Amino acid sequence: MERSPRERMVYSAAQLVRARGLAGTGVREIVEHANAPRGSFQHYFPGGKDQLVGEALLWAGDFAAKWAARYPETTSDPTPSGLFAHMVEPWKEEFAKRGYERGCPVMASVADLGGTDTPLTGQIRAALNRWEQAVAEELVRMGIPVPRAHHLAILMISTLEGAIMFARLHHDVTPLNTAVATLSPALTS
Amino acid sequence: MERSPRERMVYSAAQLVRARGLAGTGVREIVEHANAPRGSFQHYFPGGKDQLVGEALLWAGDFAAKWAARYPETTSDPTPSGLFAHMVEPWKEEFAKRGYERGCPVMASVADLGGTDTPLTGQIRAALNRWEQAVAEELVRMGIPVPRAHHLAILMISTLEGAIMFARLHHDVTPLNTAVATLSPALTS
Image 1 (cartoon, rainbow over the protein chains, first blue to last red):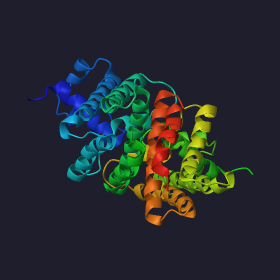
Image 2: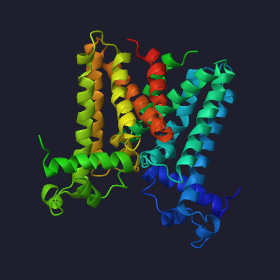
Image 3: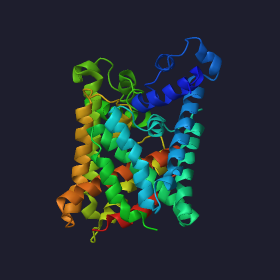
Image 4: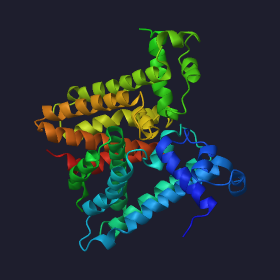
């Protein structure tokens, strides 16, 4: 199914923010990357760059949430450690297949955020919440009480974010494997 | 002791990158923030913004390394969990005292990095290596074998980086406390 110009712009915004950060990504580059008609940006996104990037972040949060929710399909013996390895897996694949250009768009946006809320802050929070919620739900499904499930979800996402940083900086997936191996004892229920 | 204009520019570069990221920080803002004479930038930093920001990142890496190395002064019973809590402590203090404007400059730089090495990549790597090395040295001092000490250092720094992201986004230090509490079982030697 072909994506519409609007969908392509949302996708391109997410990919460019992942590579260059929020401040480093301009509307013109997004439109070019999406191969969208020049005039279409204002038509689809009357709220400007904030609207487009906000949608891109929510799209990325949904993507991560859906991936976490697919974990039960992959195993007959779900464990928190196994879920964490599942969360790390697409990052290893991304880096191996496409190189280290693209990190996490949520991290990239928070890094540029400063201390005051912007029109984007709510969308970044919503994107991260969707991801955290999806991870916590999988943990609850394994019998972990809700509060601890959220604590472990925060731990798992935090560790993954930092390990992505190490991997991108060193152009090496080893830190992701290190994270999976060393975090495991913290993830027993 | 008063800092020289050159030192102030390095310090200001680190603080602005922490708040706004690499792409969001301009030389003119750094010079203004440092209250330095306008013409002095090119004199002190003939290599331009890359030289200045590179020095700022190394300064930040040294700062984090020195902080880790001070852990033994704070306790008569050093443990890996205690070291991690010690690493988290200044972040809680920073956020409580100064708000959530400033994150980690290494993370902010990596977020904007893209996939190809820039003149700054080496300095970012060196800054992170100094930090990792200092944390690993403290763990080795506790009797942990060198390879495991490096794995745990990567785990601790990764988790801290992600928890900083949660804390800044939510304007709340709770994720930092969650990281300390939940990571602990992974840090037993």
